[in-house]
Amino acid sequence: MEWNYYNTFITVSADCPVEFGTVPPDKKGGRTKPSLEYELAAGEPYRYTQEELMLEVHLRHKEIAPEIVAERGAEIREAFFSKPMACMRASMLPKKYGWGIHFNEAGKLALVAMESAEYHQFARGTEEGLKILAGMRSSKKQGQ
Image (tube, rainbow, N blue to C red; front, top):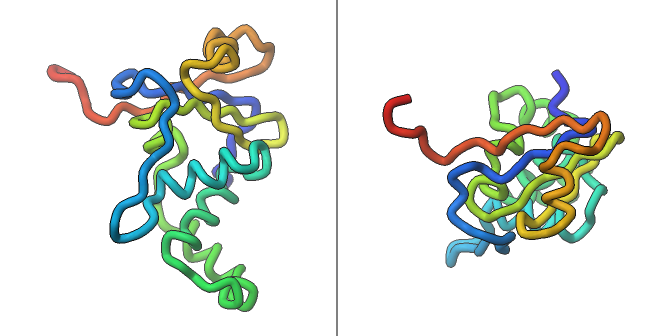
């Protein structure tokens, strides 16, 4: 099963509580998944596919040592992707922190702040071949 998006833009969730892209905080007890996603994606735009980012966040969040990854990387990857999981549409980046996610033709992703001209250009859907998907809502509306 493939987890990557290509030529796709994930917009900020309709119920996102912020008005501009915000850096996710860490907690006193350590790193959070949103802060790791942000650090990796913002630090190196268009380096990671969704699969690569999800796996790298998992490795860092669980603090799996690089030597273990080097030794058992394929096994760790297979175990990680064998479980059901949410895609980047359900990430806290578009749901809570105001980041759109652009995937290029190679499936590599970059964060786009919701207040930026680039975000509005992608969100308008004027780029030929670009698929627009909404970030998932944090909660269901009443009556749905």
